[in-house]
Length: 338
Ligand code: PEP
Ligand code: MN
Image (cartoon, rainbow, N blue to C red; front, side):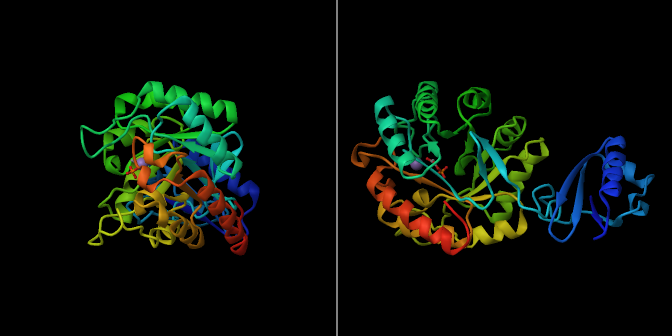
């Protein structure tokens, strides 16, 4: 349910309604837009049958949220959500945030070398998988906890925020101890037990769109996380399966403005897994920023030919540096910054 307030509702009236909602055992979510204020309500709404909030001073109307992804929807919260991912970094505001690093954590000194480079170019978040969802059971599966230790050691030394995938509900506490942002991979977007588990933490979650999932499916999966109480969700478009097989997947650029129209959550784009080829990553990154993405996650490796996974789509640090310079100019043209 949402309470739409009158344009001239006073602070006192708003506070009074918020208190009343809390007294009824419901949780209010205040969303102050430029036009008007909306209070989204979560909880057993049957109590509203005996307390008609519509008659309170300052209220224009009380209405149900029609979208099936209720908490995620713009109806529930018209203002953009800004997610604090730690170390003073916020995603969803004017600043576009870049996450970069190797597909997999491989070795301490190698990760340190890559991390230093991406930081110098302006990336603020270090990526690196320790639990890898590989198509073949015979491919490198990741270093596990040892990899998480390396990721957290490097990021602490350099003052970077970290993002890393968690694949199993039983590993959520372990991964959450080491990393700042929990990544849910494309193949796990509809692993509902995993979504509920990360929903019970307060950690930011990077939720990647499934390979054959619609935008609505992505928003429904985000709803699982929010409905457990964790509103710190970043959506991520990473390419979908289409008949086109020149690229690894097809980057659905329209998912950026669509998700941003329907949902209040930040939208990140992963051009690396969409392209599958490093030579396409810069163009896709620029189109994502032009389309309104709030952040990018890009694979970078200093020796891509030796990478344990996804070397063919990883940028060299020097190419990444050039891309970051281009993105700075582009961001300026759309009144944002990187
Ligand atoms: C990754 O980020 O390395 C990864 C496996 O991504 P996705 O889940 O999008 O394939
Ligand atoms: Mn990868």
